[in-house]
Image (cartoon, rainbow, N blue to C red; front, side, top):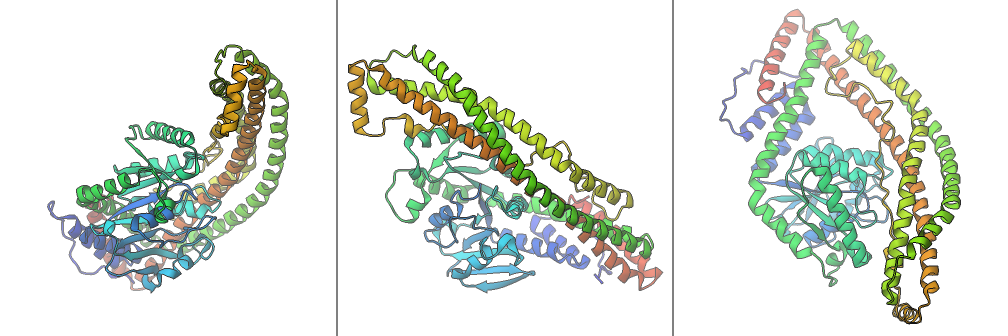
Length: 577
């Protein structure tokens, strides 16, 4: 039984520093038997005392985050691959010698760096089945010497819903962030939601456009402008700079003109200027977070002690039963969605073909009419203007159709999930009425009208490389045809380009909607499982503690309630009330 005895509950002085307050919080957690909280506080204390702060590399899966961190520390240390790799946040920190360790069951184990993939890769540790709680790699990189720790996080938006949740759960520990985006697509809806959540905790966010060596200069510039625009809109402040880099070229020491030196220089200045301030902020956030967790535990223990054990046992049994029902509903939902996804895929394919059949003649007629206003006589310039016109016409038809397709798919998705959501909400209502545990910090219901839980990643593909002369020969032919005034040459190319634009972007719309259905299903399942896990764990821990105390008699119960009440008051001083 956790021992709360006889240590007096003192009021904390206002001038007590963060480290002292965290130490006090760790003592409370240990006496409550909340080992995971105590361990978390001790880890936070250790990095604060050493002046370490976390700069997390975040973004969609396959953006090259691991490669970027390898390039920053100057050696290939993190597992990479063609499928989603990172499944556990991995901290790169300074050490005199290269080494690694993993945290499993609250115990650190030393491992060889060559074995990291066994613990952090999706292939060898799918959705973290080995229950790895943390990974640290020690390197003698000069960039890390001032206390900065680079963190590789699981990519969001992959088919592995657990990876996205792991990254979201790590957000409270982030002190600064490197958001890694790409050129195709430049930034996804899920990345926007993630960076918005990170920005609520931190001020320092560096935006990196990676893999710029794989796109044309025009695509690179377009992606940067687009990312800056949507990020500025979401964060309600301008994005001062986007670093355009190729991490792989840097790691391989291949010469390439990009913003690499500027990125490294700004990270070094960040470490020198803001490191101490960020560790102080991390301590304050940690105090509030851990105190709130302990406060919930204390409330649950008080409740369990104030009622008969039989009542608590009955509610725990009911909780287990409803949790089992929810798992069955999740399995039913999987079968339902598999059939629904196949049906929806056929519907969307048929609608895409119909859209293309109906829209192509109309779009062609509009292109030819609007082409009459193009008067450029120089061939290459005429091609550019006609191709830009084809892009505008295609966009004009594709984007409204995207809204139509999203609306229909969302209606089908809502119909498929409505029964499931109703069942889960009934479960939450029962938990609330029976007061199995204090879960006021959790959501009380799933929104039956929420529809898709994944944002659209679609962006109109301008196919810039096809819009420009593909070779010197074509450029020369364009110039010659311009001199000869052979306008049909350019019009036929523009017509074919318009057809490609419509077909390609219609296919991308279909793929985007289908992917949102899959991701929304996975996220809905993850929301329910996480909710049930939190409620079940809290309730059973409180009941176990109540049994131990009640076995010692009425006086022990009274003493325990008194001590828990005192701890509750003290936690309120940490911001946990």
